[in-house]
Image (cartoon, rainbow, N blue to C red):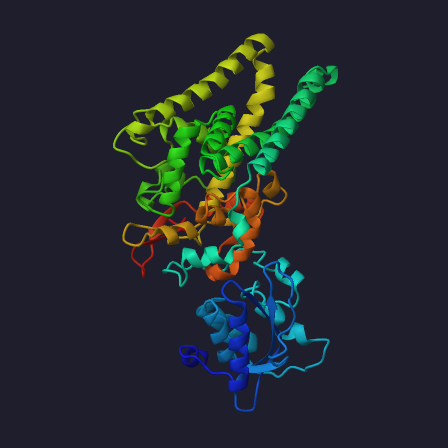
Length: 516
């Protein structure tokens, strides 16, 4: 029944249709519509009936009130309800059909008392697309996206909306950059970093208890490495924003701050800035993505095909987390294939143009200055002192950068495109926002707002969460978010995303796989 009717638009009664149309037009693009479904049943004629109520949510996710011109209890068929949702890009037709057909299969009429109205079908419908189906603004905020992995692949067709549509849904102030506000985050990070250093150098490394016990020494080193590593990661994020000119309205200030912060974590600022811009311009491209291009099945090393022992895989993951960043910068490990040797430290690398060579050399000088300072400190304080103060945090920072970067672009439900299918907009949506818990804030909201970053790379991090909430309804099923703990996501990714292969029904579309 649903198959026959969802292909055409079913009309609501004229009085309701007019009110509904007037209601939607009054709010305009970017509005968020909430539907509370009270009950689902099959009437005497065999039609599946939904009793629902429609709300309107404001941009700040507060209910602006029920629409008084619309019937409070609106009875409509499943086809009419589905057409309305699909027309508003709330949900894909296939997902709607399967979910609702499962819900009403059997046709048993429910009792309509206040105690079980929501229980009858709301709990099922909210799994379909939570950001459009809710009872209160608070519910909408909490259920704006499923707390589990999506059950179906991300759409790979050309979306029915444009970047302009997405931008219109975002409040204009989200695109404003404040040098003072950005600098305040940097100053806070510097103060925390200095405090942690003073604690480590003044108290931990001079403590007789720590020095007399390897257990205490290693425990304190790990704790310090994680805490100070988070601060170095925050430095990296700020430098990354500077490279996108998202720090302030002044290019000279952005480049100055970015050069200093990235040099401190041994990242060649200008070199990475240029290669990272190419990543943004070619995201999701199987041939031209700048970093972590997926392997084809034929390219997977023989050893890895049989590396199914969990202990062995843990060791491989640990090794990658430790050395992947420096190897990528030094020898373009897991980077895009070039005609000749490529390195972020080589001004004559094919990664850079002739005009960029001077800034590549300047980036090299910044990293060499930090390495020289560490060498002098090692002569003065000892190698173990430098390893404790800088080495541990540096390794932790690199590990987290790899984890975040990989998880934001690697998932069995997210496609890659070859040259016949790739488009910038589709490629930019082939990214995943991840929930890193409190680490979202620690890393300046980088893990959970990556889609917004690819759409609007000049948007500062302190506006990205608000912007993401504003445009999620526009993206609908094209928006990907995963609440799975990052450590579990990393393990799943290692096991599930070994190589990509072409979709048998859709040429030019590639999905991750792990079977041999």
